[in-house]
View 1 (tube, rainbow, N blue to C red):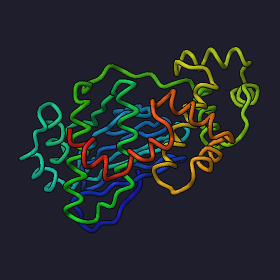
View 2 (view 1 turned 135 degrees about the vertical axis):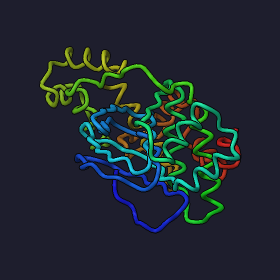
View 3 (view 1 turned 90 degrees about the vertical axis):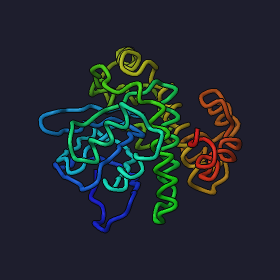
View 4 (view 1 turned 180 degrees about the vertical axis):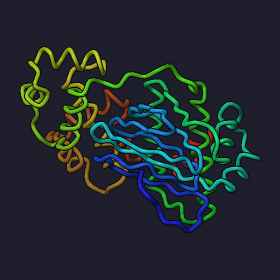
Length: 285
């Protein structure tokens, strides 16, 4: 969480990378935080809320919140001006319990609320959050469209409000994932990762399977394809250059992996995932 300028604007969207703890800080806006990569903890009034990628947290206006990345995290945060949020909630079809939560957040009351979607929903939420972060929210008209998009994807996962307790992955697993994210283009071997974790290769594989449900190299492939998708969305680089940036020097191999994990090729993803397409169809439900 980082400070933003103080001029009033209905909606701000901040895409940020965090590698150090943030001391408690309050904002006049209600906040919706989407963890798009890594893990983090939010601390508010003695409440500790652990979050993993794809999780969403709703923070009340004026809430004094500290953030602790574990050890690094990437977030997209929506800063919602309370009067603007209340006005929009009055005419949107957003229903309880989500509407109740957002009303409380606009009023500056209530605890931090976390939403934990399913695995499939997480991919959609992360992709949508990054897409929204790439849009310009400086005009009132665009702010209205973006808020509608924000409420739309939140409404899809409101069934996970009041989730069960969540256990973060082991610290050695988090350290290895942070190292992978920090240098995706490197030719990683399991032996490299076991040294980072100070575990044998078999112990590391068991830790990854237990914490993340996949062995280290499968997690690396997922991290690479997520970054590949982001580069396809935010740059005009060729597919080959995007693939090389994440450590795949054979674009055909990158295409096979993305097709397997996302069900779509890099070229198809770039064609369909631009802002206009998402705002015009995907977010409107």
